[in-house]
Length: 162
Image 1 (tube, rainbow, N blue to C red):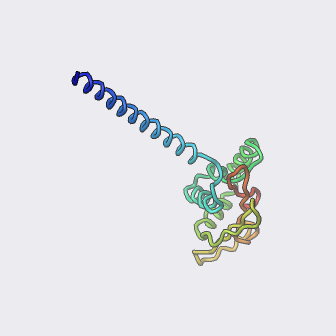
Image 2 (tube, helix red, strand yellow):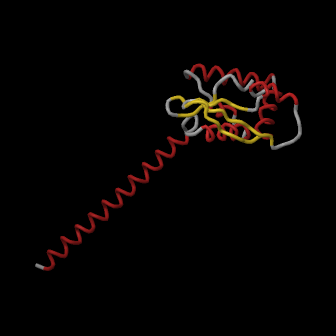
Image 3 (spheres, rainbow, N blue to C red):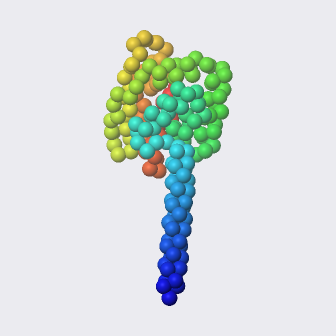
């Protein structure tokens, strides 16, 4: 009789450990899936995260990824802008150079709320050498970017880069 109780107890323990392993595997898979989905999302969770991601894309010459941080009403508009940008990058390389120069010479100074769905991100110069052409690149030389919230994510307002 003792033998029967011990074997059923061992089976229950064995089943519990199998259930725990299965649960651990399911949780691990969910974590991996959510991390992939969340890192491939467009825009940013906060205005500052958005601008940092955009600046990182520019620094790394990931110009196509740069468009993931700019708000477009639809995919067609985004694709058209990316194609236009490719033409610019071939024909007017100086605009790319100025954009990279701006990103490398500046850092975020202030993130200021305008309203619940709009923030201004101001930059401060960290590299003191002056490049007069830069004033024509970002918001006519005002050293800030406007960030807007769309569908719970933050995006750069389009048409402010040049």
